[in-house]
Image 1 (cartoon, one colour):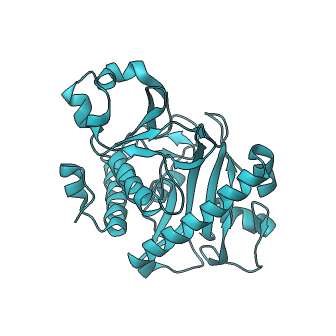
Image 2 (spheres, rainbow, N blue to C red):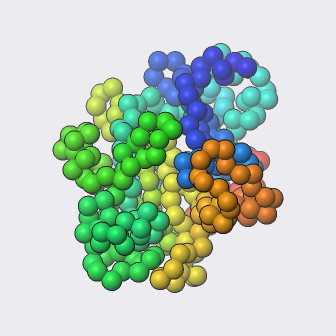
Image 3 (tube, one colour):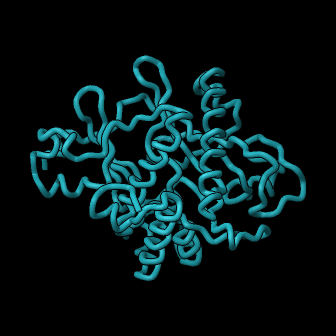
Length: 305
């Protein structure tokens, strides 16, 4: 397969290919990871949901920070990468992004507006999240007084990412860059939360990643505010004091937590009901947030009603 010659690496979800000296082809698969383990059962169309939402958010946030995206058209992928194979080109539709090659900043930049997930666990133990002190007496899923920046160090492949304090980010990238990514991450979260609120969805938290171009400028990379990188809750059903029903992969995590599995590879096969339930949640998130038809996205590779 021609793509193999340009292959760089596979992440948990995306496969990366080098295109020339300054571009990167990102192809979102239907793989799903949970607890840092790639599960053996794919979720149909998941990669296209992630790519479609990222395309929407890259456009929405371009005034906040430049991004890496150059094209989503398979015709812009050189024939020496696809081999001109119609099947390869067809499979790229809706799930590919051709982006500028950037040096990845080794920090997962997380913004939280609500207390959930690992943040809730850490708060119960310390009263803080990533070194950010929070008021006493907060409940699970409570809205925070202000969104907070709770970064994680991007561990080498095969290891768990580690929540860190802001001081560690300064050590990793320097004070000026650390301040820059914190400010932009919080600005992205506030904008995303406002867009989601209009759709009746709560953006509880989100993770973004940044890269640096050869000229030293910062760009937003990878994916943006998708069900894989964010917690989306239905605002109409929101009730603090407990975990919330999510449009993200928490549905799968909850099923996994009820299984006799030690969170090490290989993960268990997902039952059909969990696969369909997860796909439905991802598609609902896509359609509510973008206001677009996912069926039309599949057919025409456009984000439109």
